[in-house]
Length: 443
Ligand code: GLN
Ligand code: MG
Ligand code: MG
Image (cartoon, rainbow, N blue to C red; front, side, top):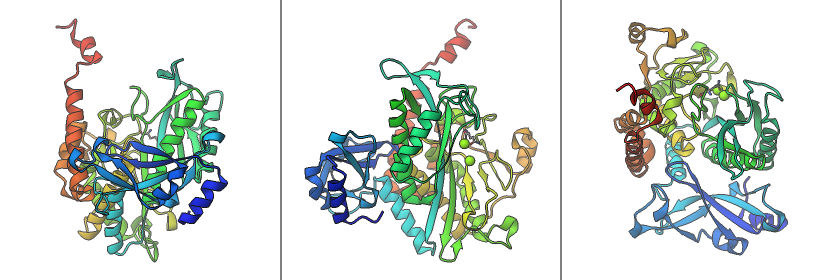
């Protein structure tokens, strides 16, 4: 929506809104919010709501902690689940410094910066269609998640194998009330696993939608006595949860990836963009797959990619080109998972693609054979390299990629790298059940 301040004032009245939730995302993609009573609406509309940024992950030092929230009025939305006597609406905000400049540690501001670069290069829009997957676990009587999945269903199953049906329908209805255009919702391959796809939109809008989506899924699941998790691999031995990123680039003549006379009906731009994506695939991985557990998903045998390759037909490689052409010509990046900070992930894939366009990076030949059946020699002959296999190696690859550094800006980049080294080290120094099971008696 293109709401003016007055529109918002009117909506707040007509919807009987009592509370405003001001939202933004931290470095780790965690949605943060502060609630103010509706009496503060004018302060908000004047960009005068202040908060202490020093306690937000990846934000600022104590000495410079005053931050201002500038509401993006187009994101005003009433929470359909909020009670009648505590009607709550949210608005997503950009974080500004006291000097009136956008704060560069705010991932949403940073994405807007990269989009500005894109516009300077003559492109009009970068559209993203995400495919987030998640698991539904039963909760115990204290509202804590158990390890029991809510059903034994599989891909596209119906009830009673799909016991998440009612919950999923309720999620979809709530999303629709919040302005989402839901394209498809279905049971995924693993038991208890689901996917809901919503319509592509421009980069900032989609990143906002992903954040809202996760909040809605968790909130509505809870009402059904279920715990929704976007953790990429909650259980070993079955598929994990990814978040495929479908992307298309536009110029004023339409979809820049489409050329009906090109190879596979793809344009030169599409191949350069793809070249950039593949070149920076290793550097991007820490951003798309940012937690220790992400790398338990990126293993062979569970429909998640482990090698850097692309194909117009095969579904296993890192980048697939779905068969749609014309306006919906797109590249589908399959490595990312739903724990990625969507603002940072989208900024990075865009910058990778722009690097490909600027430097005319040639995409390697498409690989249509099953990569998982190739031996080391065949992989080498086809120039197929692996994605990083753990968070540490992914962060090292990120440290070696100046394009990704540029995509994130100095502040987000250095905070992220420091935090992720710390996270991996904390994991590395723990002794796990697996080790005791395998070594205690043997040695
Ligand atoms: N769950 C798979 C993954 O980890 C994807 C499955 C699918 O959507 N085909 O990426
Ligand atoms: Mg899927
Ligand atoms: Mg997909």
